[in-house]
Length: 227
Length: 247
Image (cartoon, rainbow over all chains, first blue to last red; front, side, top):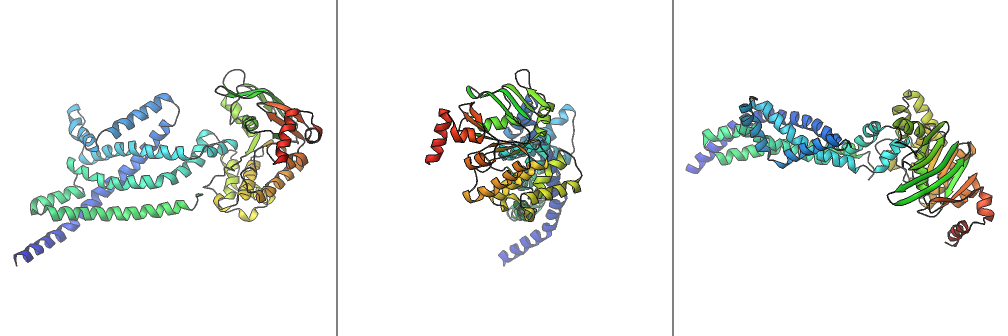
């Protein structure tokens, strides 16, 4: 009898909390992921171009940036920005602080993916572009990048999915995203095991949907590439 | 049309071109032959500045660049390249574009010509290389011979004064060589100015106006096909030709 009551209580808590947690995911986790991913990609592209530019100061600055953001934990970067910066007069709201921290971090990582993708395109493609009188930037835009996008899709997709999960770190700076919501409910119901399993389950749903979209996108690009 | 004067190129310590003097007249086909490592591909790549020479000069049409002095200006490079089209050993078609798009890319992006006009001309070029029905295929759907013919059409689309061929049939299966050589022969007969690095001696003999035999970074012998193949007195040419015949 006692065990039955407990099971019912847990089922009640889980079903009551499912939609609030899912909602936190849809309102914060997903927007945070999407915004950061787009901004991160733009930043990553600029860094990659800077590193390939053959302009020494630009190259050095880009390398330095990547070194800093790849070499330090994301959690520490978030804390410096949110808890540290107010002491030098820069106070950020939790959500923008999270967006900035994730963007810088993602930008640094993804820039290496993009750089590698650009470098993976055979030299003959550059030469063919030059042979029809393209300038360097025309060759980049019309010949190299379209092919590099295809090459970088799988690793960028992976990094996108890991970003979905990384956004849980925003809980540490009081953004009420998916994980934070789970924490709050766990704290009042005293059922951490089941609630965190539920949280994990909702992350799994998000990741699965995104993986599916990623594979669709890759298929679309696959048709054009010589194997 | 093309005049090379004392052209030099080195890669580090290695002198690849040791002062090349060559002229190719308008409307003629020059074939460059020679053993591997003789510098023939480097010579061809210097003509459209995929390699920058270290000395001497190149003039194509009205454009002349001197490489003995200061750094070459980008505008000069662009002007010289506009005069040339290149066909590569490995085709180097753009894999993300269809055959038709490969041909249209240069005229649209570089020359900024109207799309409809470019499409019409591209279809004419496809017709010329016998691939009109392959317009919408991607390179990986085409055979090597077909890809190379698209490569020729892509180069032609820019309306160059000179076409450069870098071993255009070397990567092809033997049965596909003929279709590419036929297209090249047609172009030669129409009066296109061409410089062809090749191992196809039959083509050199039948189609070319001038044979340039290179060995160890110099022009060892230069003349009409009859002079070079028929009764050469040059020891190195003889050695090279004999080696080819004994295979």
